Image (cartoon, rainbow, N blue to C red; front, side, top):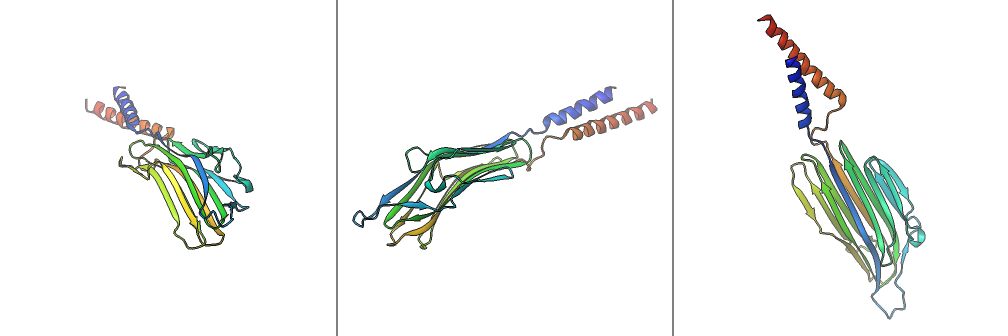
Length: 250
């Protein structure tokens, strides 16, 4: 029985030494604002951004995706939350054309395997001539990782137009790699701009994506109960076999 007890103690010690995963990542943006500036006060044109009728946002949690008509034709407020397991994606109410702005959060908290939370907005628009379009918001990333896991939080803001002008892409992100290295770029200001000086209206697209991701596959996860039982049973068998062999030689 001493051998069996020793084997059991060894098994439990091996189980205790197995890393318990508690990695998490959160990507959020607050006070996202859209501003229009008149570049020519004498042309009689009122700066206007007209969103397309198929404007939408999407929420994706783990592998469950849900499309949402977020603002409608008037870019009105929206509040929507989606969750799956320990992942979540949230779009909070707000008006991007007012001082209150618009806010969203994507987060994931995993103990095994991998998961992600994603919030996105896809805004096709038409912009009047001699108009400067400014988009800005505050980005916050929070990442933590059990040694050996990979976690990241990212926000990507892009502006494209149909006049072959220089487009604006702004990326801010943070990540913890399996070797423990921490990486961050872009600070906490998310911004993009476009000046339409073509003399005509132009079509363009504004897209924003928040992405939170955790992958625990880089190291072994906590064993399943069946694996623990098999490990204890195997060690107990070895201990019993050794004890009998020693008894034969006494």
